[in-house]
Image (cartoon, rainbow, N blue to C red):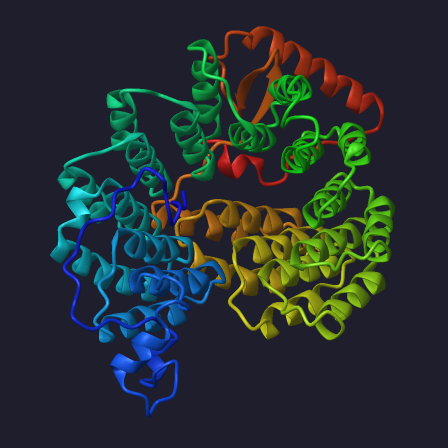
Amino acid sequence: MILPACSATATPIQLPQPPKQTSPAQSHSNLSPTNPNTSTNHTNLSLKHTTKPSIDPTVAWTSSISHHCRTGHLVKAASEFIRMREANVEPNHITFITLLSACAHYPSRASFSFGSIVHAYARKLGLDVNDVMVGTALVDMYAKCGRVDLARLIFGQMGVRNLVTWNTMIDGCMRNGEFEYALQLFDELPVKNTIAWTAIIGGFVKKDYHEQALECFREMLLVGVVPDYVTLIAVLAACANLGTLGIGLWVHRFVMMQDFWGKNNVKVDNSLIDMYSRCGCIEFACQVFDRITHRTLVSWNSIIVGFAVNGLADNSLNCFELMQREGFEPDGVTYTGALTACSHAGLVEEGLRIFDNMKRVRRITPRIEHYGCLVDLYSRAGRLEEAWNVIKNMPMKPNEVVLGSLLAACRTQGEIELAEKVMKYLVELDPGGDSSYVLLSNIYAAVGKWDGANKARRAMKDRGIQKKPGFSSIEIDSSIHLLVSGDKTHEENENIYAVLELLSVELQLCGYVPDFSGRKYYEDD
């Protein structure tokens, strides 16, 4: 969390004042505000009844530093801090909090380095352990810069901690994947408020532990802590990733019951659109979107992507055009949604036009997801050589998703040579991945090249790679059931296989012929 630069409860540390101090404006000039040729005594007499009370130099410098921090100009803020010290003006705790909060808000190597320098100066004055706000700002800065070890060190040395300090440390640990220590701190926390619970839930969601996030949410409700909109946004993200529509519906109902922040909170509405879209309920997503009175760019992006992933390309592209007519300028996410829609609908030329518009008209530099959409666009249309040319000419290295898209198309088209080229890239990216070997073996088997299928299998064994069993999940009464391939330990095992047998017979009656090519090569895995 970004700590406030000022607080009414803070008590400034009394620092010795140097004999000569200047404000930011005065540091550029040594001239007197009156006639420079007038003596100092005469100037004081002439201004006796007209001058206003002077602003404290520390306050003036801190205000200037704060302005640069708020606008994201950390380098200018650092330069101003250096000039402040050169002017012999001592910083106070507000100065340190302002600079450290900026470093936390814009984490980078440079931010970490400068934050460490600020820490050293605060240490010299004893503020890191004796001032709770400075100490908390340091914990936040180190955690967000990825140095949770230093954050824990500061936390342990602090003489006084408040609830914000505890929540900041918990959030920092969850952010960096130190769940065990975060939960230990959470258990020791004197008062577990909404912010503390949200830090735990949000941390699990960010690290893709969605089931644990929902379990924490249940515990939160059982102990009587009321969630706020930040909590619900994290919970909705977990529901979207797991496909737990039941819990998502409950959260939506809870939101509608909130008179103050629920019904008109566009951030929650955007999360609801995303959740319903990813759970396959695009009609509910449309209802939420239509109800929003003040839509944001994120609102439009959510519905555009939602239509695209649900195969409604026309709706997605219509929204893409409508948002621009309403004055919204599309960003990279918008173009990802529009390109995905074109890919699913086979609109190759339209997709290429949109991609060209993004680069030439909007001046948006394509990211890897945009090139991935382009590869998928060509691959689904069967234009594999053009897809391969996109990969070869990309300004960045392709990832597993981009290459996997082309490799899957190679199987559909029976392109052995191209599949082997793609496989070389995939092995370099993920030597221990099993899915690429399985897919390559299936490609060989589909065209009757059993030597190639056996070669892929041997390569897996030589590298010690085991085929991971496939699984799917289904939600029943707000509970997630995992169905693992070949598993016979589920409590509803007999009913599951009975239904599968029934579905298999009905599919075959409809003319479906199952493809068992390559199956025997992995029966023992």
